[in-house]
Length: 56
Image (cartoon, rainbow, N blue to C red; front, side, top):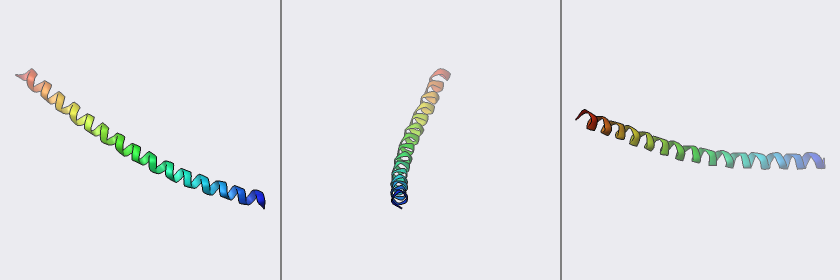
């Protein structure tokens, strides 16, 4: 019985940690994807600008 209850506590602890880790990962992914989007936009603007200069 003691083993069973401690195992249950461990599982609950694991689930709580997993949930918090999951939320952290989601936040990080959102931040990273935002940064990537900004970099892509800047990159495409630079390319457009370079092409404009090249064409002229």
